[in-house]
Length: 301
Image (tube, rainbow, N blue to C red; front, side):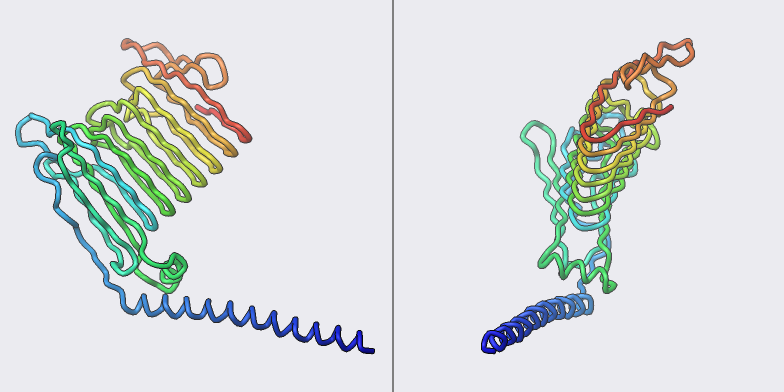
C-alpha cells in the first residue's frame, strides 16, 4: 500500500514539476512578446541616404580621367539588401530604412595608403534576436538597405551576408574583383547589361542558402568560381562573352542547374565540346570544371 502511495506522490510532484516548467516557458514567451510589442510601439525609424562619407575620389570627374581605384566591403545581416550601380557622377553611398533601436548601420571611409580608398558598410541587429524576429511578426519596420557602387573607376567589391535576402545587379559597374559570401540567406545576382569593363574575378560562396546567378556573360569574368553547400543554385552563363574564361563550379549536398551560353565554345560540362555555328569573329572559349559531392549538377542549353 505504501508503495502505491509513494508512486502516486511521485506522479503528483512530477506533474507539478512539469506544469512549473511549462508555466516558466510561457512566462518567458509572454515577456518576449511584450518586449517586442513595446519595441514596435517605440520605434526610431530612419529612412533616407546616410553618411555622405565618400568624396569625389570615388566618382571620377567630368573628364574621361577615371577615379582612384577602391575597395568596398559590405557586411550585412538581418534585412533585405540591394546592390546596384550609382548614377554617372555619383559617389558611393547608402540608402536605408530601418529601426535604429533594432539595427545598427555604420560606414567608414579612408585612404588605403596606395593612392586608392577603402569604404566599409556594416548593417547588423541589436539586442535579442528572438525579440527582433517577433517585432517583425508584429508589424515592425522591415529593414532595407541599398548600396550604390560608383562607376567612375575600378572597384573591388566584397560582400558578406548572413540571415537576409540580397539582390544585386552588377550592370554598369567597373569591377576588378568581386566576391559574395552568403549564409542562411538568399542571393539573386544578375548582370542584366554589360559592365564597363570585364571582371577579372567573380566568386560566389553559398552556405545553407539559395542562389540565382544570371547573365554571367555580361560580366565576362576571366575567372568564375561558384561554390554551393547545403543549398540549391541556378547558374546562367549566357550573355555577351568577349574573352576566354575558366569556370569552377563545386557543391556539397546540393543541386545546381547550369545554363550554358550559346555564343561561346564550351569545354568540360560533362561532355564533348559544345561549338556554336561559326561566325566572322572568333568566339571565346569557356572552360568548365565542375565537381559536386552528395548532389547533382545539370547542364542545359
